[in-house]
Image 1 (cartoon, rainbow, N blue to C red):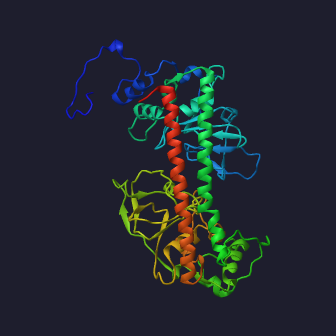
Image 2 (image 1 turned 180 degrees about the horizontal axis):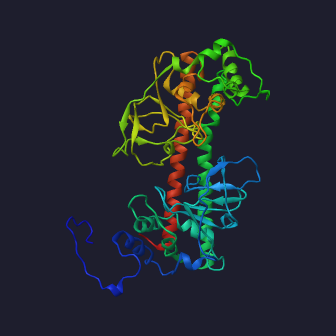
Image 3 (image 1 turned 180 degrees about the vertical axis):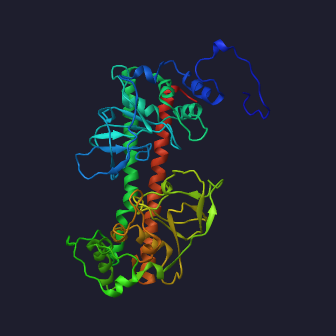
Length: 457
């Protein structure tokens, strides 16, 4: 118990003095919230009904707008759900699984145990998954949004670290969440604190969105500026296709989907551009599939969740490293082969290992194509239009190794590639500055919220 002590410390306590959990990490939270004179209440005492676990139903594709959106722990982060998020729906659910405005979801298991999502109704009807616990609060006792912001504090993070059971998958059950004590200032103070953080998160989202536009939408503008159209293809929706015998013999797939008009339009759009060459990716790269063990190499391991869609930036999300992985080198292009991660493409900035759901591509000749140019092209619609009709498998559709080899890449001269890469790199630097600025301001706002609520640390 002595700070900085290296030796085992022993202490005695009377059993009658022990209430709830009594371990060192759990006590850190209790010591934090006693610093202020605000009344305290358990989360369970502030609810309007018993907290509820979500449905364990399988997630399936939404085919109709009337189907509720299915919120799983992978769909949200500390900043909510992305505006362009593609929702699934649940195969089955009951009335109790529908969310109401003001509900808060708590992740109960996994690497992100403790994270929360506030449902404000803006995404439409929604149900939630079994790895979440829904809390519905009595607005006469507490403002739900205040509780939500309280879960973004360092004090709450200490509680999560102290209460979770680390054996196997970390988890926190419903009863443990109900026991969480929160400071309870008067309603006006709750409102004031909530408005403060609401404004701060809006500023954060604005800057993050501007950074995202620099990394995604500006990519298309840059390509177009140099005569390469990588926009979403428009085509006549017919199921009739014409192919040559040579094409049939040279490809591994001969189904109608492989020759879907959208895919063929994308390829023909590349071929018709006289300023570029249309080259199959197999002629440009080597596919590196050097197996290695991932166990104990978490610091080097990159999973699918670790890369952001459309931008190639690191997301900060980590995955447990186990089983086999692929080795990659700095300058390799990592391309996710599993739906819905096809726009997750990263130019490696250092050596490492990655999930085997990535294709690891190493450019053969940088006088023909620059690795940074290849990574940028692989994130564009002209590639997505080719790949989404080449996927196989029902539960986890993916693009095969052989089909990736047949992707058609627009290749301008190397000088044009350098200009495109330089402009995109300047956009990336500006975007990263914006994101760093947004993160710093958000951290300062949270610290201010916590100081007003709990006093100085």
